[in-house]
Length: 597
Image (cartoon, rainbow, N blue to C red; front, side, top):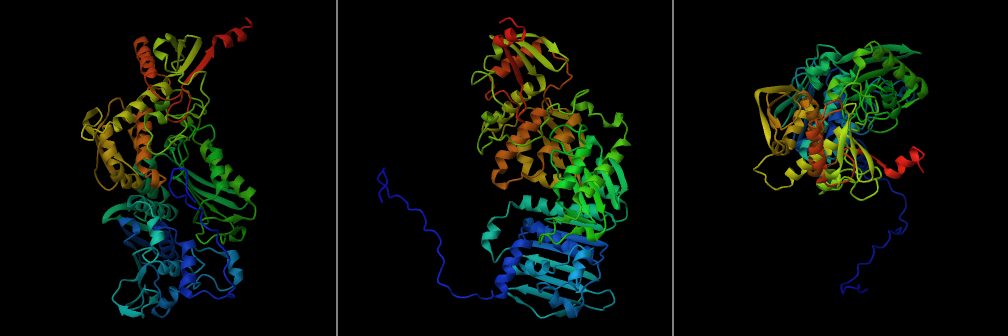
């Protein structure tokens, strides 16, 4: 069929039709294994999770993890656990072969991480796997390899006590799955996060992670949860932890909570376990966040590492092959136990300790407007300065701030709001949001100027600042380094978990440098919008941590300069986080309010 423009119109694809009935057939074993692997092995991080959990079930006290090229080329997990007998090594790579269950009744009393008998078989179905294992009372170990849809014979080898599992060419036989993996940095960060969570769940086990040969994480395995948290999240976090231990109706909640000042822009540091198993359960997350209600700025999330211990018979862990989801027989009781435990621990801090940090302005209410570093809802790849969020209705006129240079500045209210007289009424400007909007557009304009060799103006530091950060932030430095340099930062790695900062963009508050880096270094959540998302996130964060704050006194000259800058800044009336910068009262609204008409 010819198209209007002269070309040939493409016909829609024919709908799939049911083929001729061929009878029901049992799938070949390799096809069934590949289908099962699709549920268990989602990405390299899921492989790391399954292998580390196997090591923990084997009573390992030391676990070492090596990752190459984000797990595409190599994932190696080595432990000093009980080992697998040579006679059972072949069975270990078979589906539904497990040492944890013997009868259906055992499903109601599961206390191990693994139990389904699918992990190793699923990994072997989509990668080349080499397993070497030795029991402590044996003189030699044994090795088996999988590849090209077959298993090698088991043969003796020299090996240390424990088990080593080496996974190479992940998804090599399923190129479509391999193509959907994220960047190597993103996959490496996800693998590191999995091991970090395991280290927090088991502080009695020594963990070590190497990414591309570089040590990214190390825990001693000899301290408590606070020491493990210091190794995983940074030494600065250890001093901001509050112990939790409370038994409510037979449900014991133990762990630590972070001081409100240790809050994070994402939920990555909200780690919840049920009987030692890391889970992602909305009701449990809601219970923890409810306890912090009124203590955190909007868009910030608490740091929490909690283990909810209860009768295994009250929990169904056989919900999904990844074992991340669980069901409770009485979810309300668990919710109440977690919430009460968190409330009790936070109350012990006392009123003074629970105040919002002074770096965010004095006496800020809980709903002061900080809405986190999420991209605006209308954010599109490739947008630049006009992407300023416009999530709220604008006042009359498509560009409400375009006439700001002509407004008459009347004064400052409560050191928070600038009062101005407009052509048609009165306006209240949120001084932080307004200044943030200006700086955000300026930073984005610098990014898009194309002058790669001319970074934004920066201020050198007489004494470089050393910042101890979480390993996941160190992993994110490589991907963000070029953009940080263009913004005016001079950052370099200074040890396994320390960054050295020698320069920052002009106006950046050094007291908030650690929070700024927490916001800009993590890998973007969606690899497809990586560069554009990084630009938005970095520009928004630099602007937020450099702008006037609530509580800052503003001179007339500064206020009038801000009004001039606003009139030349594109976008609507909101800051990059979607918070309104302007409240307008028209003359008609004023007359109506005072009953003048």
